Image (tube, rainbow, N blue to C red):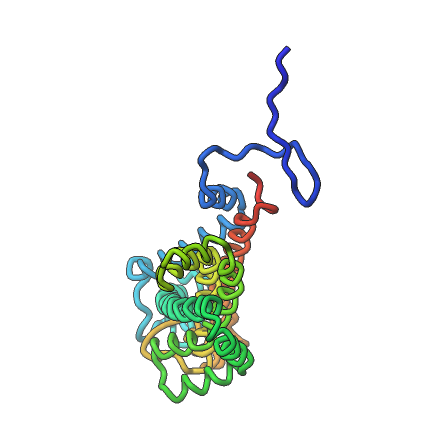
Length: 304
């Protein structure tokens, strides 16, 4: 009688186990990560929410008319005619939230892109070039220790309210976190034999960084993009709520600012609740995506 074919025993945490499933032949780590991510319902929910918000921002003109002028129904609660109610000037809040998504996500994306670019450059340089490791490490630590909110308010107030001012100000204080995470990941790669072999073979510093370090920290960058963008939207909403946003456009923070300035925060709950829920949904979705992605990358937590 032929013996039953079983997977070869594996060692995990010092314990020999022979019940581990065989990996799919030829399956890349990226494919395994994607397969594990799709199995996580919370991560998939976060991705759907983020994609829905991006599509809402892109197709805002097709979803709702631009909120301007005055309306007849002043401070009307949510109804079939006005899904999110109206503000003190009779403008539809649903239209404000839809058009506000365009500005808020644009600022979040621009600030995240700038912060990621600077953070990755500083983090990789601090891990690879030992001569500047200490100086860059001190720079990151000092920047992280600064009182971020007062400084952002001060710089935004001095520079003047505009969309790109907020994006630059937010990026200015967002890159150190990215740099610290990227540096810690890159440090575990710099000392590996294949990196040293590349240097001994005559590879330039730029070639080694581009060929070995950047691909190694790419998963960390992916998570940082999502989290940094959501935090940037949160920061933009706070600055716009204080009146430092673009007065000629709509953002979620601008809706809150108008509600506070008109004194309707306590009398018309929907004027503040609807944009606040949009911000909350974005932050929660980004957090779920990052957690699910980290779990999918970790062989100990994913189910192969």
